[in-house]
Amino acid sequence: MKFYDKDLTKKDQEIKKLIWILLLFVIGFIVGCFTMNMEKQNTITELEKTIEEKQKKIDEQYVEIDSLRETVYMYNLYGK
Image (cartoon, rainbow, N blue to C red):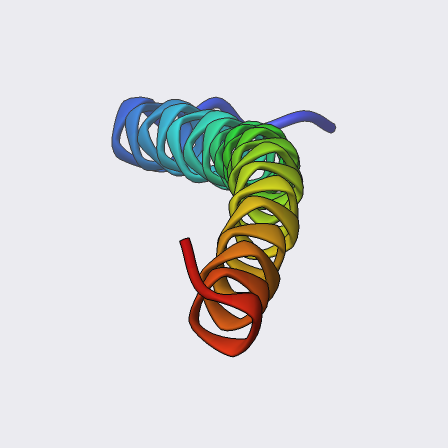
């Protein structure tokens, strides 16, 4: 003999809806975390490239300044 209870069926459906909502929220949260992690990694990579470019420019300027110091020193040492 099978019993049918409207209240139990309604509660069962509400619980299923709640479980689906929670499951979708958790999946969305996990996907969001992965996306944010990937965006942060891309930002870090871009910043590292910028730092490398700036460091190369600094190194080039250091060589130019060092060369200018030598020129000034030689000019002072040997005169006009």
